[in-house]
Image 1 (spheres, helix red, strand yellow):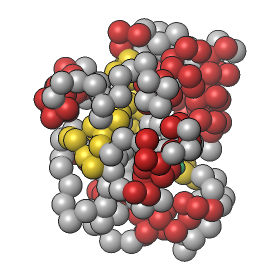
Image 2 (spheres, rainbow, N blue to C red):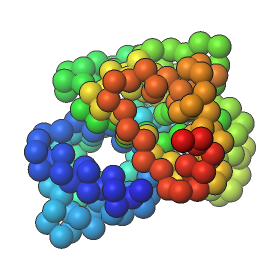
Image 3 (tube, rainbow, N blue to C red):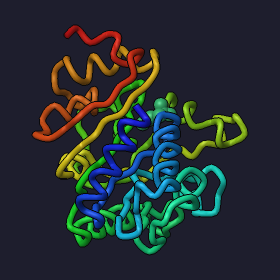
Length: 233
Ligand code: PGA
């Protein structure tokens, strides 16, 4: 998965060096970022003119906080490649008004011409970004309340203590994600097999936010065998 996506990105960057990328955090993309850094070191991936927008950030955390997604991105990608820091974007978790920050973020994405490729992980509950399963979902970037499972999944970056994981996040909305010209969903491991089958082969429903990707005309899914194990064809 990691090599396939890294090579794909390197090829896309060679064709269009000024790509606007939507980027995920989480355990799944770490090997992908490592593979991309490796290609960069080999002179095969030039990010000098690319622009990036991350999917989400925790409300209340400044960029320097070690549990922030800003810190994650510095650690796994930004400090290893030639991205221009002025063209890497994440929502500011410590903005005085998270709601205003969410609106500003969508405006910033629009000003960059929209996302060319949105790379997404999937939560075991089907979330994309931090759009958690619900009766309805906001289209634009918004302030979201995290489900217990999503907070637990992030505890490692907070000394293993779920209670220290923020309760809210600013997340790109499903409309922002679906407006990307291409969408690439990545998943690995047996723990994702059931939700991948639901998202790809079940009904389109906001109860499984990733199922909305079935509506996108240019969506691709990259899985390892374990994550693909419950697909029926
Ligand atoms: P994971 O998270 O890669 O750590 O499983 C994915 C997600 O929750 O979007």
